[in-house]
Amino acid sequence: MSNGRKVIPFKAISSGTYNAATEREKNVIGRRIADARKNAGLTLPAFSEVLATCGVNLSHKSINKWEVGDSLPNAYQLLALCHALKIESPVAFFSEDYRPELNAEGMRKLEDYRADLISSGRYEPEEFSELEYIEMPVSFLAASAGTGAFLDEGNFEMVSFPKSSVPTGTDFGVRVCGDSMEPVYSDGQIVWVQECESLRRGEVGIFVYDGDGYIKAYSERDPDEDQLEKYTDSYGVVHKQPVLLSYNKKYSPRVISPESNFQIVGRVL
Image 1 (tube, rainbow, N blue to C red):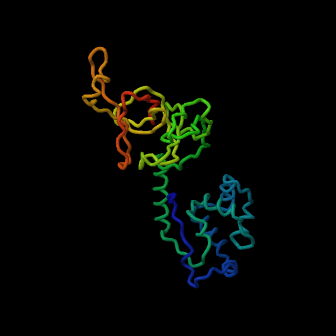
Image 2 (tube, rainbow, N blue to C red):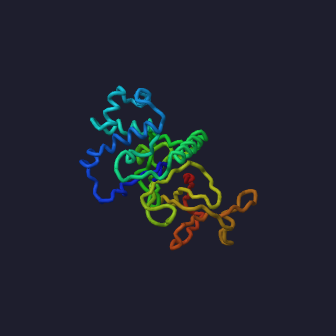
Image 3 (tube, one colour):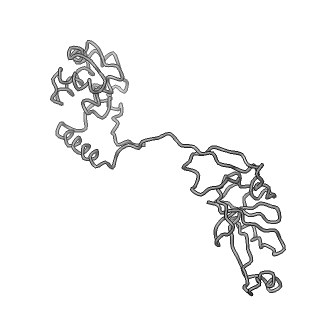
């Protein structure tokens, strides 16, 4: 994944093989450090002060030893050099056959563009913070497992989850059993439930029907003529008959019988 910096690969060595002894003999790194310092308009004492701001405390005489090849910077010092001299990659200090893709004027324009991007504030790297966890009750038993006992108080365990993964309003979690709600909800998946007594058409809920627990989409229909009386209240209002729907089309709708024990447990968030 790109971080906006161009990495120059080791590709320009004509022999096809890097030779450390040859590079050391030619003082490639030292000469490149000296060239980069001079291009930045820094004297040795001034460069020593700049490096100090990067955590490298060396005298200008020690830096001169790098440039003439008497010593070499370690890995951390090399990275500090790149930062202090605004060099994109440490690779630029290496291969004798390396040629920069931009001249001095191009590098100045590149630095101006970089400064513009930074000042815009839109390209700052993401900050990663430690995840905050929350404990939530999750039923030992799964919905559609053939029992509504997942509602019993003793059938819950407390499980830690990243707080950001638990929707606001969640009361508890239930594991899905079976494939009746695929492809949206899969076997073994934990769904988050908000307790409620009613649902709108199309909402997915957790239900208990004659003692069995289910996860289904809620719907309604007009009752058949032979059941019309059972859905008519004392004011003469005819109520809809609940229907439980599966997302998996191989399962037929489950029409709720008026003689059954039916309960809406909650809404799946």
